[in-house]
Length: 141
Image 1 (cartoon, helix red, strand yellow):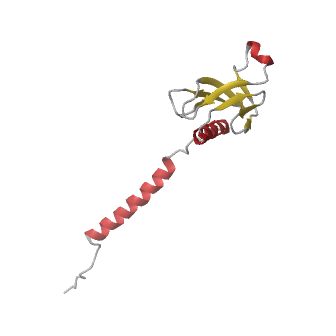
Image 2 (image 1 turned 180 degrees about the horizontal axis):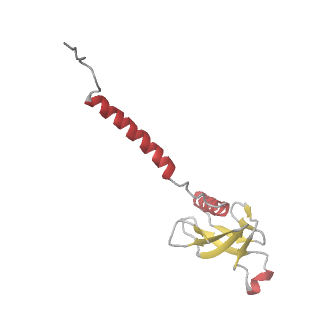
């Protein structure tokens, strides 16, 4: 007569625990593979957002002036030196001016509207400010 061991296999509970662990590990692994890294905002957008925040904190308007090779904030007197050029901003009689006001950030969070493109290296950014939005928008062209 053969003796059959009482514990010859896995119980249903043990199998379910193993399946749950495998499912969790595969979920973590798949989300790591399938998620794209978020596009970081270019430094010019970070500069503009910082100056907008400063206008809100200090409750004073800040004028962002375009100079020949930089953007300049009248509130904090910080500047952003860009390596490329701003397209279609200086035109006609503006060529002889030392600066041009690009946008104004007001203490209530609004800003003046302006659209411009910035070329840095081989990358072209289309940047847009709007009084109806609280974000400075940009896209790659």
